[in-house]
Length: 319
Ligand SMILES: Nc1nc2c(ncn2[C@@H]2O[C@H](COP(=O)(O)OP(=O)(O)OP(=O)(O)O)[C@@H](O)[C@H]2O)c(=O)[nH]1
Image: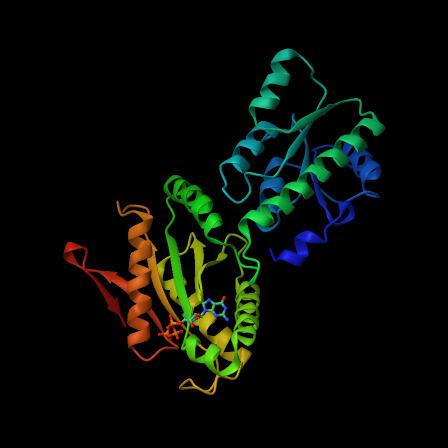
């Protein structure tokens, strides 16, 4: 998420997901909260998970007892998903026994409210948790977002990658990396000045961020004019498609660069994929992407090279 978006958010920009199998309860909850926050209601655990695949609500207010999939199961599924595990959940429950309360806390909820609902308590609890979330988002933003480009920074990479690796192993999905670098950027700075260079990096990373289609795909500035795009659940073929799209996006920005071959700013990219069955570390995949990027530069820039592994782990570019 870009810096400005997070810094300006207030309570009314927050999004609450209400999960309850009973239409009357959904109506009551929504009626009590929709003046404070924008609400979406769904009627089952499965619908809640489907909603969270595409969206990331700021808070979930969820009934514990629902047919098919109860609130605890939904909470567990969300906790196992690295990009959804931080969504705070408030349970709504009619059972207040010690055991039921422990179960709620053990499922990782941040709070619970009891039925019958007390309107004032519900509104204040929701408000308190959303305010907490807004502050947390701001703090995360300061820690994880590169100030110049709005992309994620290295701290984010260090925290996010291990979580992704764990998830990839569990879900048996490949993970692809696209490492890219602005072509002839030293010459750009030399001709147009450092301020123009900064502005070029900002425009480029905004355009690339906008061109990433899946919420799990992340753009990270790894240093200087070098960036990494992390593509979970994406095989090599898909990653090559994305990498080519990134090149096209930057090419179409048409930022003048008189001292480059194509007279405009371009990027080169190296692609590498870690398959769930291989025993290679993510550092090895990163090294493959780096070597592929180096090969792309050698091939004249503005191109994508993806790695193939040969015997003895010798990496050679696949054209
Ligand atoms: N304006 C600006 N320039 C930066 C920033 N970070 C790195 N650079 C510059 O990016 C340039 C990178 O130069 P090189 O590593 O030689 O690479 P290049 O000129 O892009 O050449 P190739 O990568 O081989 O195409 C250096 O001049 C850095 O000073 C930044 O935040 N802002």
